[in-house]
Image (cartoon, rainbow, N blue to C red; front, top):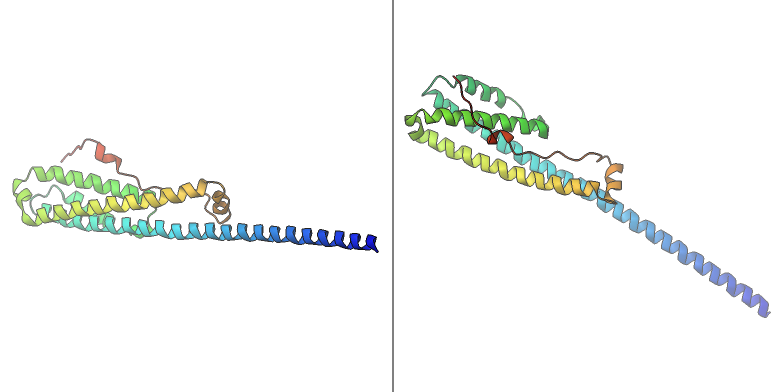
Length: 202
């Protein structure tokens, strides 16, 4: 009788241990699953933030296009030398900024920087133009558009940096690779040609 009780109690302890181990395993699976879903959602949400910040760059670039076009039209009233530059900006304006990659937006921004610098050099030769109230207003608006573009660039690059750091960090990199984020997002670079000397020929 006593031997039977020992056997039964031994089986009871074994069953309890099995239940506890099974419960721990299930709990660990649930924790990992919850972490996986949370990490996956983090990537999805931050991808939206990056796209939203990219949209801010699009708005600023478009505004800059429009203002440079108006500014050049004013300059054209004083000189015929800039018709080629005006045509260049008008052709750039036909580009749908929303369809461009970040690399293409970088290139476009550099082209606009060059055109604006060329315009500023030309303006120096026309004192009447420098004093024109409409032109001065446009110059102020262009400056504001550039500030907006720089602010949008900083927000975008900050979001991209956070996203890329999480993408390459273990263990979140496992989730990133599993759901298709296998490459870093591109940064919107500051224009290099602002550091170069301007050469204007007519």
